[in-house]
Image (cartoon, rainbow, N blue to C red):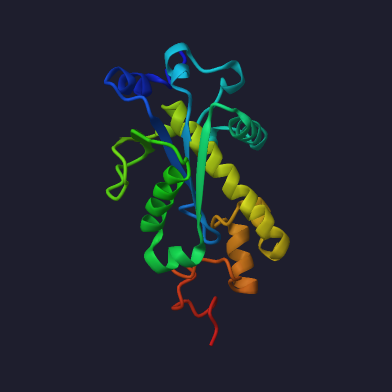
Length: 216
């Protein structure tokens, strides 16, 4: 049986909440580039009657192909009844305040970017102590909630496109392939070339104590 990805939203609506937004992030683990958060408000009628055919199959962005993610991204952004907001927190901010605080800042900024009232947020993963809105945190929420899944796609595609642009500036690192994650090829490029301007200096193995990456 297919999962009911509106179950949580439906329970919240029955409790009297109608201004629901899903929130998710992309880019906590990479060695380079920003962390991106996205917030999406789907029409409340969809919770009651079901998701339209063009969004069937919407799921955790990691479970979708790049082609599927791009298709859902464009459909979400173009739909007149879907509200989308996103926030990009640069690498230097991550190094300054740490990745967890940067991620939580991005979530708050993404919700604010919706520019409409949000009554309740559905957050992927653990509760966010600094979130400015009431929240329900769902472990594996991007595969349990259409609202979070939509935010997952928006955040992932936004960040991937950012890293594709970075690849044109620093092609020697292979950002188009690994998007800044610590793959074997990325680590090899770091050893050969050292860090570029968008690498996160606070992340191992990029800390200044590493003599191979930060020669005297």
